[in-house]
Length: 95
Image (cartoon, rainbow, N blue to C red):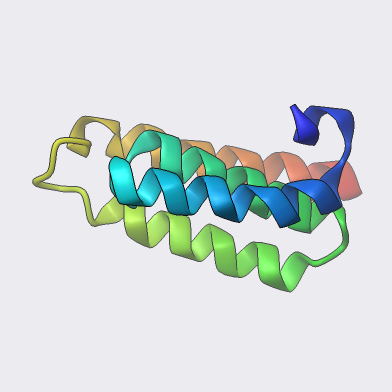
């Protein structure tokens, strides 16, 4: 909701707590935890902190790739596609 409202600073401040909670309960590779990480990356990008956003994108990709034999493996390609799609949309919005 914060992201949709454009409260990017609030996302950067609040979302890490959500990620930590999700990591502890569902695992870093869960679709929910990866989605939260994408929200942080998008907020960082929209704040002009593209270097930090890029680092988040790389982290998300690595986490998604590492689920080959885990319960979330069926979401692997969807998660990788979601990261690339978001990154592309953000880059296009700057052009």
